[in-house]
Amino acid sequence: MSGIAFKPTHDKIAVMADIPVVLSGIQPSGGLHLGNYLGALRPWVLGQEKYRNYFCIVDLHAITVYQDPKLLREQTRQLAALYIAAGLELKHSTIFVQSHVRAHVELSWMLTCITPMGWLGRMTQFKDKSGNTEAESVQTGLYIYPVLMAADILAYQADFVPVGEDQRQHLELTRDIATRFNRVYGETFKLPRPLIGHIGAGAKIMGLDDPTKKMSKSDTNPGHAIRLLDPPEQIKRKIMRAQTDSGSAVDVQNAGPGVTNLIEIYRAVTGATKETAWDSFNGITYGALKTKVADAVVASLEPLQNRYAELMMSPTELDALLKEGAGKASEVAEKTAALVRNRMGIG
Ligand code: TRP
Image 1: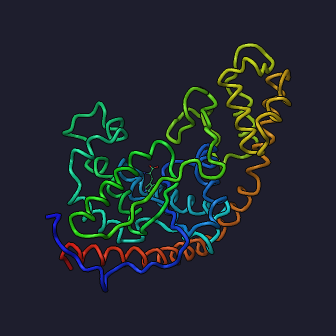
Image 2: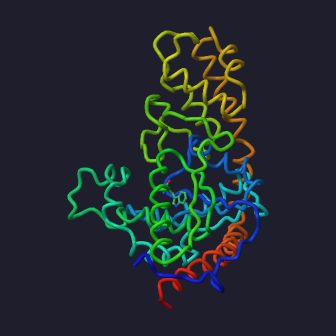
Image 3: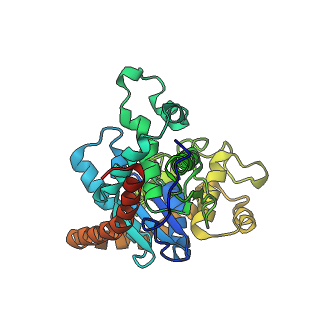
């Protein structure tokens, strides 16, 4: 099979420009929190000028676990507004909803056909999520979800994919799938690379209620995460209740995970250096520390929250932006799908 000759002639993908392509996506399931913002959205914004970016709202990924249909539609639009409110600019970044670009699903099927089950069964996220469930009742979508992610990435011939550590394995799988496709059907896909430690992406934000656990979207304890759209009063209340260490004042030499997390949150939202932040907090009471952190978080989210509120007041405009984004994305993704169909001999 792999010896098939191919002629890279008329159907070769047009190299559009010399600037690298970036693609990433977030699931519209549950409200984004400060960790998502500092670890994903903000780095996308800070790096956007250097790349040609595609940022999607991956609703097809969200339905791998049941979503209330009405809520999903609402959260999809909300996430789009958050992308823009956070500072993604349409001149650098194409923003769209995954399901609006039909080529993702088509490519995903074609890629599924060359992906061994063994590769998918080894994905740690799948093993974690399906862990104790009998194979009899694990949804197939959860299993093939990394192929859909590969389709998202390969559809745009992305050079870089900003992802967190938890998605690194899926990106490696994407490279494996692309490599296999190229070998079997001829050179077709570029191999994407992870963009980890993207500008400002170093911050690792832990849960307020348990600073030994990463802040998580699906944690249901209301004191766990600072949601980007929490009103200022709620943000303050959550931070004032955050778990600290025993004792009552900051001791830089012996700071435990709770105090460390608060100071790291402060650093991430203010841009203060490690020395400045830690020195300035040494010896102050936990109460005073929390007030400072809360004020800094509230101030840093204020512009985003205001912009978000404005965008949500004009849903028709927002929908028009998304339609435009889907149109721009489709042009690229359709070209890739056509090439892949051609390589595989269908259509
Ligand atoms: N799987 C990713 C997550 O759950 C979301 C995602 C879907 C994604 N498609 C992508 C991320 C493409 C980067 C690139 O977080």
